[in-house]
Image 1 (tube, one colour):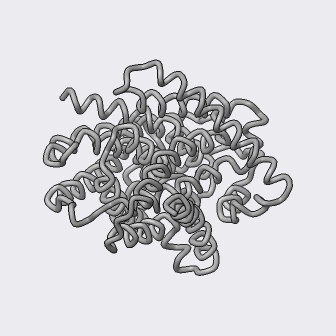
Image 2: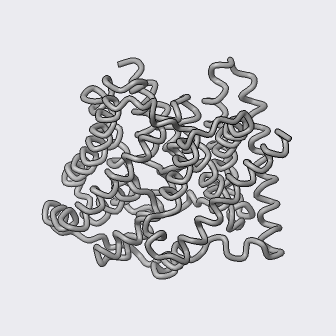
Length: 387
């Protein structure tokens, strides 16, 4: 009976994201809220209604441990690391990474020392604010952070990110254009138009997945992902036990990048979205594991302050660096957005700026951010441990 119940619970966690995605596509309000927040809410409700079942816990442990390692290579397979970057794009990438790193380290001494496992929080913030949710989830697993801190970080991140975007749209863009002499990037047109990029981001990414071609692609993606996981796990088993997860995650990231250079792998159109679906499963599962009755509210206040400091501190520091290195305002802003909010927000801010030519820059920087986020988070964590 327990095996049957475990299967039902696992199916529930795996199917719910598809229902949420369908509702987000049908109901405009839910679409604006986004599937991640909705899945976290559902998971939190499940985890805090008093359920205590061994079958539930075993499924939670398996899904929360397996989804992220499987998602990492999938999401990297379809990324292109061969884009030709202009001087402004390269400088925006470098100064953005530097700004986030400096803000995380500085904020650690102001807020992080008052947070349990503040070094882990600093490493996770470095990853999520240079990459995205995938990096936060990977570093959570890699560094062994608690589920409660992870959920609280996600909750506060939603609030802080909303304040950040509101500031940019209301006053920030005009302020930075004036501060940086109102320069606009002069980027060459590429073979892919900005309108086409926006269209691809807005349409249902899973449409056609269950056609013959879609299923063939999904089979190839799954097979290649399992191969990468097996090889990475085999190598990681050769290192001391305490380093297994760290080496495993970094190997998954590295192999994902390596395979992305193969043309056939990059043509697997569903690889990124298949990996993102696994992250959706991870979201609802890990949220259901959090017991908010055990949260350290004082630590939570410091955590909120830490996030606010990193987000707005890195934004203004990047603006200062842009002034020094003569980076145009729009490229600076779009690179900050892709770091703090991830690439899906790039088209929205590009539209607000009335400058869709920065789309390519934002998306390219975002791809690199996804790739380096795990490495940077791990390095910052180890740096904070030694400070």
